[in-house]
Length: 433
Image (cartoon, rainbow, N blue to C red):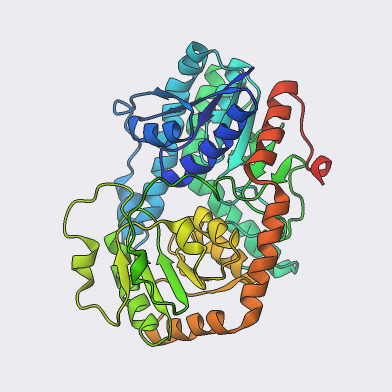
């Protein structure tokens, strides 16, 4: 029996798939410990994993107020918050993880791809490690555009130049974290990295897509595996829901994530107005994963249009079993959960990798996209009506469901992780097809 550590952000979108993977490894006879801050403990415990808590309040992240102010002018302050968040995560890993992993006496490390610095820590300790892409793969490619864009893949010279320029911007964006990692690598006498890709595991990298859902890639890593969703069948516990209020009409399930966010209020209002014009029942989940202070989202919605069923938190997997369509922010987990049940989508991405997920859903034919800030209720109603009534979207979603099942999910990912961490040798992607 080996002992593995999981290093990932404390957000549910990262913890859930990695904990599901950890559970599979436990079923295979291994011990798995989630190393994280206190809020992550309930999820680890739900999946039967060990938990090691560390305190990070004494490690503040960087703040460049000039860049923050500049990005605020174009309503893109989230980009700088995310950039500095990545750097703070790297600081936490580089400062705390070496001693923690030695104390835990682990035999290998499972690292979220967004946790920069994890590969450096594993190298420092001489531990085998694998990377899991809980979001879209960050790997640079000439054909597949960066995950933060809404672009579709293209082979022509203009598109390749566009991609190169975007990835150059990505390298600048992540440069803060790369420079921090290199300071530690120099102190630890490790070779410096030029970009975040250089730190990814040479043994195995696993993403939550199937090949049919990803964009074509010109030069993917030989160890990049498509395993499909890792937590599509995760335990959800008891969630109260007024099932008796479902009236038998086609059901539209709308959720823009589990964390309530006032920035979503305008798009909620557009969803309500659009669905009021369609002969279907809207179930709208506003989010309740974390505590939220201030006026509730429902209070901020104002007068409700139509007769929707509005809840704070919904049993998403159970509702998707009954849904005719999902309106989503195109978070990776939500999109995978919908497709795992053959449900087509209307994607309204806002930030981070959501534009890339939405672009893949539309490219694969399993739904359509709308622009978060500019879509009107009339436009949104027309998009929803198309996805509801045109059979091709549901047919394609059903085909992708089968492709995701064939990808293997958490059991397949656990097999790859076990092989990589046990042998210390690369697990080539061609070996599992």
